[in-house]
Image 1: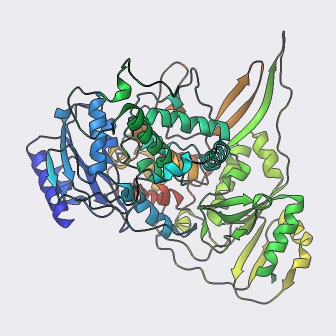
Image 2: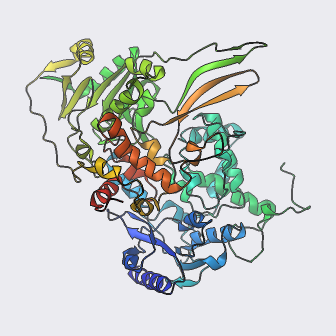
Image 3: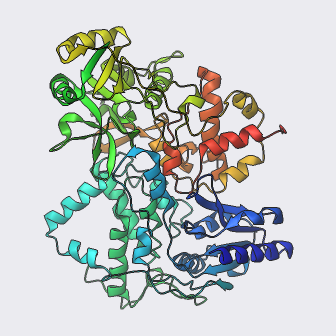
Length: 301
Length: 336
């Protein structure tokens, strides 16, 4: 990964010096060994701080939303999963391709700094796995889909076992059992909205959960309002979730959010497929739920 | 010195929970927090010997959602049939100094400076706090730098881990009365207390407030705020963050008003009825959080709103570290 770091620095220097980008988004090392974190370079002097290492887990495409309304040209580093986020933003007309310089990295699988931080915090909790992050164990797309420059050697997907096997287990539960499962899971939610904030598919200018007139979803921390929050969020994810797994990773109360999102990925493919969000970028092409087709299936309504 | 044998902690909690709701640091599944002793089924995994629990006990005195009063719309009149005052007696058992100091912050916010929050006051009046002295600071702990003595929590009684027993120290009058009730479980013993282990992070907080007073428009905020995505994780996990919103639920002509935690990280937090928003950008909200913690609160109450528990450092998805930020603020030379 040192090679990749050096190449990223080289590219960032070149882009900044030749005034091709205004900001270059990558990672820097934080105070702790494991605390690699997003880093924003505007001056060539800071390029030396850029790193790509085993903890470069964050999906940086989410930060493009911060530059949505500016004229800044942005260089950024993406892994395979992250690159699908760029496709989604382009499809949603949230960003112009010509304002982007995409450095793709073939991803060898990443460790989750949050898990290590929790393990080392001393706070009482069962120990977390410090090896490859949970989201990487479901990885189907280690190699970037869209890029201007590609770094690293092509990787095989890191997933193992049958895709959607956990979803099938839940589908096979009887309705009461399934309701109980989701009630137990979602009552833990503290409604911090980290899952929304970290999500690149959540790019609405005013989120439905922030709407006050009318207020669509109550702000009580109760089973009803929590379920409503997660149901509405899930519905909005249909056809948009790129399975980067960031929502689940950042959840401070360990809600298995990817179970919900994967079910939608599976259903989207089944009803409107074959389709997987953000798997290819064709200018002007719209995802299935962004267009109306008279033949759209409606048996499930 | 009075002590309680560690084997007597469970019988003590069992007894206390017959009269009061007792909140004890425990592990529950993949989480840990101050859970009500009676609500825990099966084996109760007490976490008194751990550094701390993941969720602070702020929920006990300041619930995330709290009903305030019910409302009813009649033909001509509008009535308030009930106001909800929670008078249940509570015990927070085994709180660490950082989290106890956060309750002191709440006391100042909700009970002083000319306004008393009746909902908080009622709950607080009926709560006894048993502190658990902390001799082994963790990797992200920095309470000592924020002016807190980890072995002397703000509490009615403080217990000190001394091997097979806890030394029992009644601090307040309430603490002495409480001690009398459990006297039969205590015994006299001569023992030495452990030595406080050194903190991995210590810094001099002096001067930070004065520095921040001239830094509102400093360019450093842009750089510090850039990685922040404005999720509310830090604010909700923080033991001392106490912002709330008041909202209403109505079905037909009946409903209730409630308050719920709010977070300065959200756009909606400062949304004004007229459509304006004084903190439109992510950076404005980020700066406000740190200025409130480190400057505004001190200006009003004479001590910072951060108690150095380090939870925000462990949970921030993007590695934002308040110790780092304080250090960066201290390094800023030029005042803009």
